Length: 497
Ligand SMILES: Cc1cc2nc3c(=O)[nH]c(=O)nc-3n(C[C@H](O)[C@H](O)[C@H](O)COP(=O)(O)OP(=O)(O)OC[C@H]3O[C@@H](n4cnc5c(N)ncnc54)[C@H](O)[C@@H]3O)c2cc1C
Image (cartoon, rainbow, N blue to C red; front, top):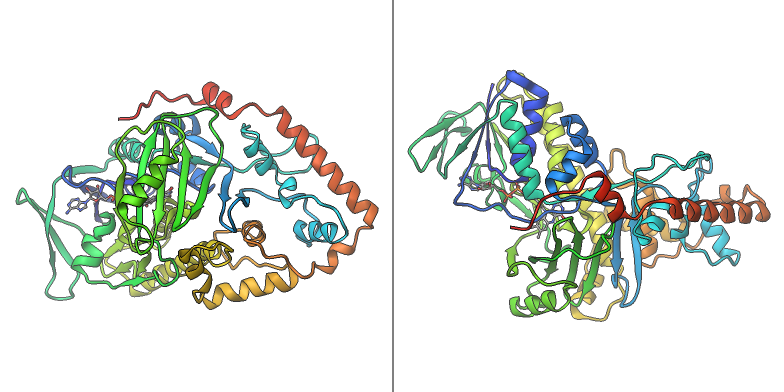
């Protein structure tokens, strides 16, 4: 089968690498990219499943981090989101200790209700290590049955695309440089027939993968698949990004700091720090955004700030006829929970699981679209949660607080507020522990805890919590500094250019 991938950003090269690796010579893969159209040029923070993607590709962690200037990530810190001066973390990994069927946070809720003043994050090893700037891979805590650290990465997505391009071409992918000027549709069924490049060359395939970025050249422009706009839930529509010099120490976590009309990110890489402001253009001009971004850099800028326009939402079908869209061509959710590259990854995996034998089968397409829709909506709800429960005073934040939220989210919040209970939908990306941290972090104080948490006596509970705190503190103390570990394990020669 002939496959053409349009676009050589992270989405295009991730798709090329995985399809060529998994399907081998059964597919004749061509990737078309244009030197005249830049990639989006941002995308630095990820979530833990990216490890699996690299493993399947056979990429070692050290090579990957060296090639992409990458660092380790243990979670995302949210500063000023609830209100100015408040801070919490969505730390990856678990909390406390497995308590049979009773999630650990119920025991913590009980302890707090009875007068203890521990923070939930005293029982997150990831949080403790992150705030101490410590890291090394740790699958479990030695001499205990407790799990260790769960990590993702910060890396330069442009360098990742370059690296995957080199690997993919070794695995048989053909690269064509050229600007696509026309997408020709078949008369008979309206599917894509061919692409005409500026050079006059025609490129034909059985399956087209649209990774053309926000343009959505094939799925959106040519096939006219509608875009579902979610700005009424997520009103930010601009980002301004700027790299700055690396500073020490390298923090093993992403920082997301709310400002008067959105938030800013700070992502430490080996060769630079990625910074950006996400904002709503109704409340902040481009000039104000630039001042806000630049005045709060913690090291000299390495380039001029760059403005990116976006609209939050998704294409109503992400696979239509003989065209599947991945990455920005399929939809966009702001990078608050670092989910875009993950959506590329899961789209590729979904495509491979439903890969057509020949032609296309409508049931496969419907299943792909159903799963993609669910995944996008679940992530959307998780992102809205951060905005909806704020207590900030500025007009932008008041608007976020007053906005109606999806029914699926309001049910989840109400259940947690009343009972402390939270459930992960089937196959949902975010774990119960992730939901707990953000709901508590955004100020929900559950009225009750699960009766199973009463199974221990008060003395037993206190002993358990004290011993967990001691174990976590001792474990973190023995970890090397994140910088030290990077230097010895995967130091990169990448420089900013
Ligand atoms: C502000 C912002 C911050 C982000 N931060 C994160 C983050 O922290 N973590 C994360 O996971 N994701 C993040 N993302 C998303 C992430 O950057 C993208 O999902 C990812 O890079 C994939 O982009 P892409 O390949 O779909 O598109 P692009 O990088 O835009 O690539 C599009 C490609 O299509 C080609 N093309 C377009 N038109 C034509 C044509 N006519 N002919 C030929 N070629 C064409 C271009 O040359 C280019 O190669 C962020 C996105 C934004 C906007």
